[in-house]
Amino acid sequence: MRSAPYDHLVILRCTRKLLAVIGSPVAEPAPAPDPEDWYANLLWSDRRKCLLLTHSATLFTIFETDVTASGLRATRQLITGLIGRELRREGLSAGTFGDLDQQEVLLAKTADRSVLGCMNDMAFTASRAPTWPSSINRCGATSTAPAGTALPSS
Image (cartoon, one colour):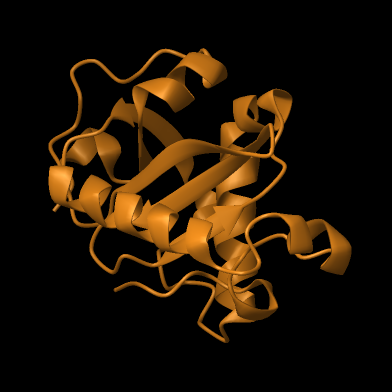
């Protein structure tokens, strides 16, 4: 359970690679790892930035192609928008991960190697899928998952 100062926050645990692009400071001291944390990694495909976003407890994963550095710097809007969009696409309640409209995003360093391992597996699997990456542009999809939905966890 989150400590009091972090009650109304989405904790986004970013890889060093992503933090370098975002350029914003991380929380110090870092909040303790929590099952409600989100993890984010920056991937590259055909010289395009892609964002892999995974919820720690459920491994609900979102893969977004063609993200821009300026979009990544608008972290709250990007992250809450992606989560909300994917929840709608999956037919899940908008409140599945809390009231995202009422929460701020706090950047922190990654803390759970098992979540990162799952993300690496998902990235590897997605990179071997026939839709990675060229067919994404042809069909106008924003994700490599079927019909633009969130990637399933393994």
